[in-house]
Image 1: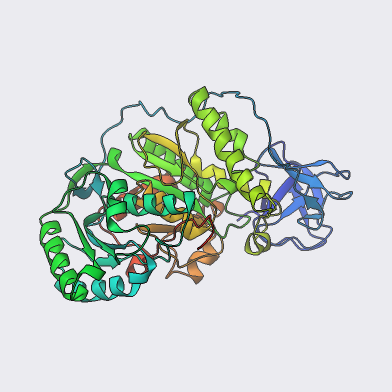
Image 2: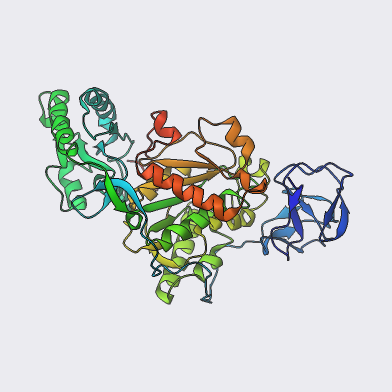
Length: 497
């Protein structure tokens, strides 16, 4: 395994793939450079002298400015580099010809074994979901799920409750977003049946929520208002038995991968994320889009500093304008609460070698691959356009992954350099950026991208990931599912009454 990687020919830093010791000499493009200090694995070392205020270049792009004079061989990190980002920016649409495969290209059809739903969508799971309208009935929902799992039969895999603390004492957009996310989940194809569990006196009560749900199959979706029931547990279990009976009529069958919608997310990134896991997921995204499938990229604050790369891949001016609004609206959200726009990366990111938000964003956005942007979604908006879509949601892992599921993703690919056990409403594939993490936390990690710095071929590894995702779509459980984890988090944006 080589000691370092120079990602782009114009970079003035290299990334240490293994720790480089002070005094150690490495050959960079034919030049012998001696490390002036220890450089931890995943961190950067200067390969050119830089003056104070000069651009630090990685991925062929500026990731910040030198805080002081830097000599080649020095360790580059938060102590000597700072962000160059400003607040609200103006953008010019400069469309580029992407090297991603055309979404119109016809390839040999690939399939997975999924559940074809009556509305034309496809599920990768056949679960019964209990969706509380308000946090007051969370414990009842959890108790119902536990009791109903003893009655699961046939193709039904599990009864799952999704507790959350919202649905009442909310105002304005905050309340609207809660209602929209709940309605989105009620329509999700991974749920063969849904019990909507209300209290009765909450703001987002069942009658109100039905306006957001719209048309629904009464065999698939049932409702229970606890305050109107003499025995909500008995009534709830009866309804769940009916839903289990209905959902057990579905069986796995061959479904085109063009029906797959996969969410793209990262968290706990490190210095390897932008070299291994994120580019690998980008290759996967391009492969799925070649096969007429759909991917969704989110976590808008981690597009800051790399947003123009996405903007210029927008298929048309309208999508470019939507992407500009996506970025600036999120910046205004921070400003409206008097918060620093660029309060990122996290302590874990920094420990792993990420120095600035630009450094993080240029690595994060590689999950989008090279295909053109076909859609831009508001928070809670369900995806309509095949191909690559951008979704408005924060960087928070649970909130963003839930937002991806609500927009229609049946699976989420989650890259990480630090590791995390969390789950989401849908199977969440954890992809490690380095082999050490994969070996240490094999109970968390589903796929190891660290092999890419150990000699593995990117194209072959992307095909392996694609095959693994097809397995997951066909019923293979990911680590968090094996552990029985199911999480859901709604974006809290407003006041609480």
